[in-house]
Image (cartoon, rainbow, N blue to C red):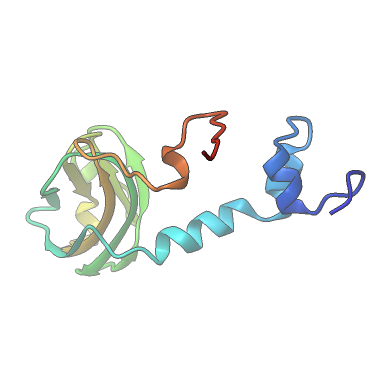
Length: 140
């Protein structure tokens, strides 16, 4: 790295506000996040869906991915937020009520699905993100 010509990682690490969005666009951050989320093990796998509804085992703080594994229209679903009736959910979508209820489109006739989500009661913590903002460590 040179002070006048940092690479993308170094520029992101420096947190230069006037460059952040350009840098995120440069690395296709949406693609990177999608790849990371798609590689996660589902929180619930092949979970049964009854009458187009699934109550998750735990309330979710965020739903990242829903992939129908059995039914008329299987595959990844687009996410709606809010309380919907099955007849109101378009084909190819799933609605999340912000808690534990997932509502599938009546037309999709989903009977099982994988769900990837984080729990309201247990936030996801990783070592790097558990540091305090601006934390400076000293040895000895």
